[in-house]
Image 1 (cartoon, rainbow, N blue to C red):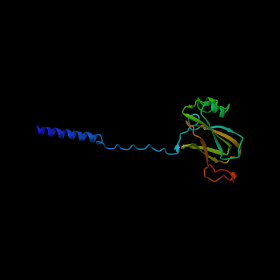
Image 2: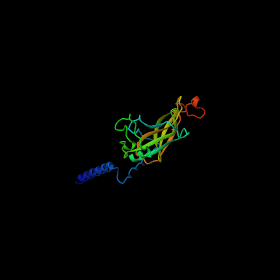
Image 3: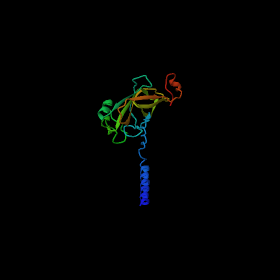
Image 4: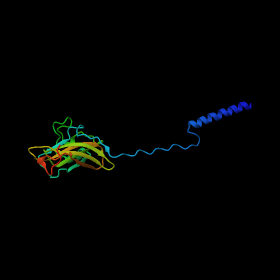
Length: 199
């Protein structure tokens, strides 16, 4: 009987050891919880025009300039149709925009303001000699930055103007700043010495 009991005891010890091993051992310390990932800034942000595309950013071009500053592009924010209408009072979207966005008061555009923030960029020191590219939008811890390339082309009229652009960002309440970027190319002879770089 002793041999039988010893065998049972050995089997019980073996089973208990295997169970504790499967559970990480008896009384061992738990593995430390890894720290949460650190947010890396800046983050690239997707953006579109008011129609949800990438080809209808220009919403106004007026043949008069209101500023001599070549790099002073301002940003205004709208979180609702009413606010967008206040920024662009009594103005309608271009007729060539795709439906249902074309030929509508800006306050009436079908924009989902629960998920989007509308931004109106304005350059009062523009003209037919300037070309623009909305390069990128980046989000940092405290701001959203819109980078706009502004460069110059030869134009015989050389008329001043005011131009406005519209874009949609993911919903945000962070302050928005505009960074006017130059091409890095030499200024065209007709705009020297104070013109921007050529396109």
